[in-house]
Image (tube, rainbow, N blue to C red):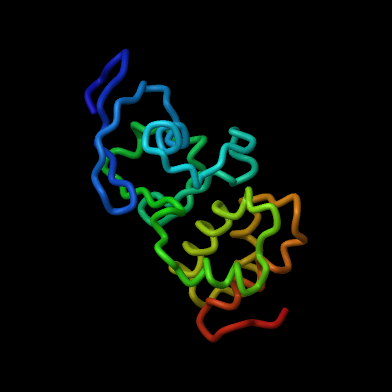
Amino acid sequence: MRSCTGKCFLELEVNGRTVSVAAKPSDTLLHVLREKLGLTGAKPGCENGDCGACTVLVDGMPVKSCLMLAAEAVGHAVTTVEGLKDAPIQTAFVEQWGFQCGYCTSGFLMVCHALALHHPDADDALIETWLQSNLCRCTGYAEIRAAVKSILAGGPQRA
């Protein structure tokens, strides 16, 4: 992207597709995903990086999209919950009852999916570290832990 003061056209790779979008330099990735591209899976929660409801993957790593400018995503692969395409973590959340109201679920799905990809042998301590980046006001987190453990190498782990 060239330097601009008004709206610029950004080319972003989102869910495996290249898209062109008009955005202001101050637009967050969350805003562009939801308002410009219609991808509403990432949720606006706190919009200051505390809750994790807006989590997406950037080059395979969880990022809070409310804290990232859309322009910063140029040249990087962005994956939203819509791009998971029946990933094992989605089935695990259903089977383990890892959601209640569902507002935080997409953020947790993204974090747990990335955890399983990068640390398939994660122990309880590493799982807890990764889950700390997201908040849920409805569950006690036990079901979310069970869901992620069910997809890790070796199947469910006992605490």
